[in-house]
Figure 1 (spheres, rainbow, N blue to C red):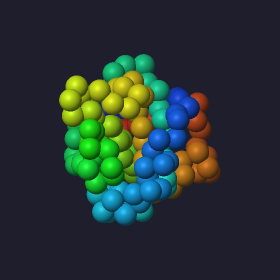
Figure 2 (cartoon, rainbow, N blue to C red):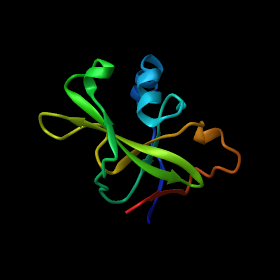
Figure 3 (cartoon, rainbow, N blue to C red):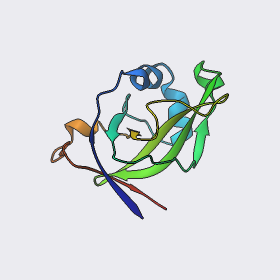
Length: 124
């Protein structure tokens, strides 16, 4: 297991919009209902995603990019890193130094959640 430490990075709410409009697509992909939106965690190094599964962009009206998922834990909660991937050039999202984390619960409101030191654990 590899654990990375990071801190909150404010996003632009693109995942909130996607996950609200296409909640059934996300639930089918991950096997549970997700809180709409991601917790953006800024880390000091580029962390390439290890894809466990993906949502095809055609399923969410974004045919130019797919959403890659990697199962992880954030602090003590099961979660998913989600990385947009532009099919043409490999770019997408905020890059590999901002981890976009989706979870079934709203992480910022979780009791005891300290957003000054967020631990993201990957099964690598």
